[in-house]
Length: 252
Picture 1: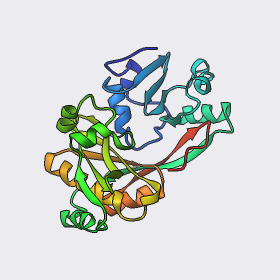
Picture 2 (picture 1 turned 135 degrees about the horizontal axis):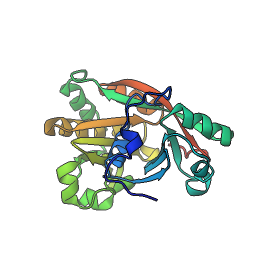
Picture 3 (picture 1 turned 60 degrees about the horizontal axis):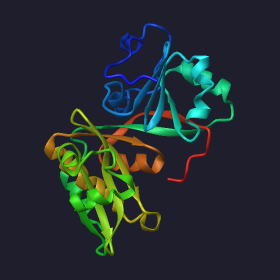
Picture 4 (picture 1 turned 135 degrees about the vertical axis):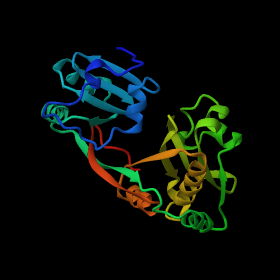
């Protein structure tokens, strides 16, 4: 096992072979991992595994690590960054579950601030919207803000908003990770409070805050509903891609 503060040498090279990346752009989580700011890098010859929320598979698949994937990360989701890795993974584990995810890209100027404000104003009267403060941060709703060392760290580098119902947080939009003025967005709403506009209200408040502070928000949609929500807020589809797992993913 190796921790790197820089990209492994073979990842710095321009791809001059027939290997094609699976995503249009490297996800923010992977970028931060390769920069040594988040997660852990495991290098095996010309094969590289980045454990950064998801398990990212880069380089050339090698039998040594390929045979260990199920033992090490049985309950995690794998994302292949090369066709060669995808082919090797599915050949070795033909029964793997796969899900389609959507890499979204924000279109500057595509959504007026008034639209985001309107989503916030449409919140049902029995709910209350607030930004993350120290009280919210200490609660870590839906595990949000858990990757930040302190409230001061979150306040400087992140953003988030929550919706309250009868004194309880029932919806939250928050940055999962911050890296070079970029944030990875995560939205969660308690099941019994869904389809009431809570998530879009939280996300609108967060996006307005990030826009005012010059922070770019990345959105990786896990299902069509998340993709639709992103599109309402000015994002467009960058690409679809497959994520693989040994176990069926939990219902979102």
